Length: 180
Length: 337
Image 1 (cartoon, each protein chain N blue to C red):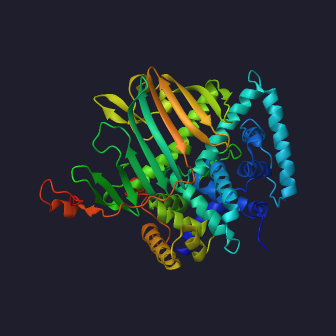
Image 2 (image 1 turned 45 degrees about the horizontal axis):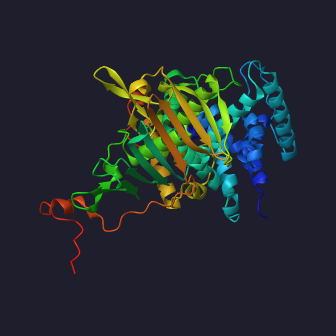
Image 3 (image 1 turned 60 degrees about the horizontal axis):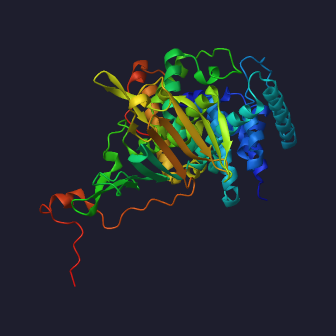
């Protein structure tokens, strides 16, 4: 039976909001979640109910997040540099500082240096918990492309982070050559 | 990336709390904003953001239901109405206008995400000084200079499927300028960057910043006979024209969509008269900034319904152009009868 928009919102909102908040901070997450669901609401009659809902929603969200790639990179770099997670401190509701260990800072630095599209791919996998086929549907890529690119991204990160999660932090300040 | 690193990455997200019911209700209401008549109330809902001054409420992990959400929306609306009525020195009408224009900015951004058209004009004493029309659909973009004094005016620069096309008036034909990947990333000139800038200007941070300043400086609104509403206020020029660099010790400030600001508009502290027209559907229709005898206007149309950008037929490559004798036409002149 086809979901109503209300049911879809109830099923996916919390998860999508957390994903967006993790990526761009609380304030922007509110805006992006609203825009994602506003777009979904507008397009609801055209959505094929036989298709899975999550990839469609995350695909909309991905198109919106793409415009925030500089802000996201800035936050990741700040995290890597200071160890204080901006996502957990930029909002009114959370006032405590969250200081990160070296591994987390290294990971944030490595994420910041990924090309935006690769970061999108990895985070849809790790944070949105989408399967390869769902990511493929969200990004309109072939499944094989998703698999191979995900493999390449993970290998690149492994090379950068090292087997024990160590990293040369100085590399985090190098400029990125790439486009969103 | 080792499994341990992947798990650490997953943990990043695990720490983010779930949104509370108030946030859920507010965003649900905003997403489904149904009709013009309810825009005002929905706009008020957007104002019910948690304040730093409020005590932190322990987060209740929700298995919330729509019935609860509806109650939350009603409570939030009541709270918003109470806060609006209780705020000192500001009338409910002004509060509503501020909320409505912010909502319009959000709706405009959502509408413009896939496709849209903007007509940008700078006029001096009522005469067109510079202008262009920008159409976009997905990753395709078309920029047409509408200033008549340039030879290229009227012919667009297009990007379709990663290839750039231009029109050469000397050869009267379309030229395939090359793949977009040949442009230096980070230069601000790649189509992806252009598209990001367009979207930022149409409904993104530029517009939100302007709306916030208009609201702060005293917003007035006038209903029009066609159902639209014109919101007027003043905005410091520095919030409209962004600083992009320096030349001879002077900061260069550029308007959204790429025109260098001059006169009072180049002084970031100057207050410029700004008017935003919101159509009856709740989406921004026009943005106008005035200083002295100059006016900068952006007219939005076909947001979400601009047709796909189609590559020009019979475009010639630059390589082919280089091997033609000087003055030769790319498009042969048809034989005269």
